Image (cartoon, rainbow, N blue to C red; front, top):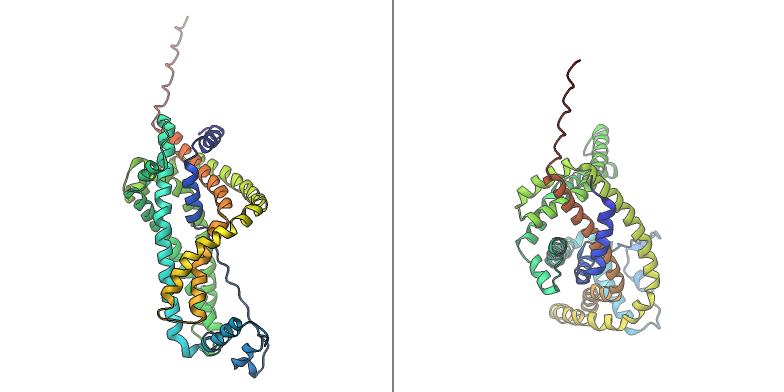
Length: 375
């Protein structure tokens, strides 16, 4: 069994004595899937025939409102509001919006992957070398340690691991759509038994998604370190990492449980840090606005070539928002980066110790005591 207390202390020592890792932690905090734009709903069900009339939308704007407010209201009446009152007439518009959103999401995912996976690879290799030889490297050399094919392999490993979850999500989505169509429309797609089966299939898929998500979250830590420290291909990495997990599931489970507790503690600390860092957020509003103005102006210049009016300003604002909040909340991301580095250090040290335990020859059994001759 691994020495978990030694691993936790050593990971903390490495975090505070290897300061260049903080830069990589900040990059990981910005690109590790921390997102969550909440979609605000808002159904205004007042009833009545006037709901189908775009003029009602203009009634919420006072006559003494600024000119740009009236301009925005007129644009919404002519462009946005009709899409919701008569959606069947704007199918092509919805398809275009969906394609644009998909392209934007893919571009953002590509840009974040080009930062996240090299940073992950660099942190694992830098900590491993520090534990082996005591050598520390600068940011440039550390980035070179991460910018290679191994980072691409980590992306492929994540893609392979996500395929079962994606398949289950599609099954759950399909079951939900089937049930919704059968219940909400006069056209019955399936009978009652089929609806019950679809609901059961949806709940089963949800349960398996949770189980697979937890399992993948644990074994991925070993897959990453096998790929990075042993320089193996995707197939060999999955095989070796799974074998190591099965042979040492007690030690892995111990690390996982301890990290859950540490993660809960960090969540409490993060809430406190969020409040304490409010003055820093206020100081960064002006620099964040200046930085965000650059992508906003670029987006406005491009959008104004084929669109005019409020649409260009809306797209410019959407382009500026991520940069603005990234700068404003940079101090909090530094704190998040510390935790991500500490977590990575714990798993790297646990992997190294498990490798040592597996390669260490078992202690030879003592020679049997010779029996005394009978008297």
